[in-house]
Length: 118
Ligand code: SF4
Ligand code: SF4
Image 1 (cartoon, protein in one colour):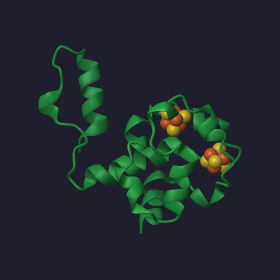
Image 2: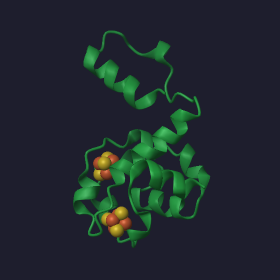
Image 3: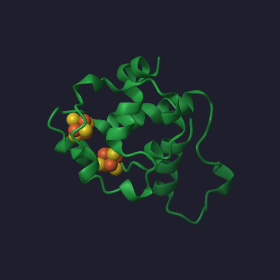
Image 4: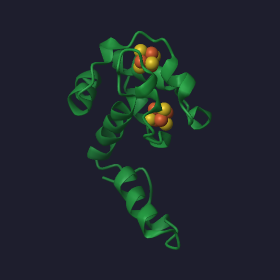
């Protein structure tokens, strides 16, 4: 079940979330997201596997703003990471390495590989 997998990888208790929306209100990346951070939590609680195909976990900047704002101490950045891991563990890379522009700084390329490839 998706919920169990996410809780195991992230170490977070998703049932603590009461959908107040403070995480979404403070997230700097919502303009690029197809599901808001609180909606991601709700989808996982419902074991809705469509969340694994959402763009949101990939555009999350891991800035931890949501976790800092959450009154229930839910660390959504860890939950986003868990969703990416579940996808990458099925041997599906999110980006094609051949399409990376090699003129980018080396540190950016390494960080990109770590986040987007399995
Ligand atoms: S801030 Fe915390 S409790 Fe509120 S919706 Fe986000 S994860 Fe849930
Ligand atoms: S860690 Fe991700 S979801 Fe949380 S506020 Fe930052 S960009 Fe948004």
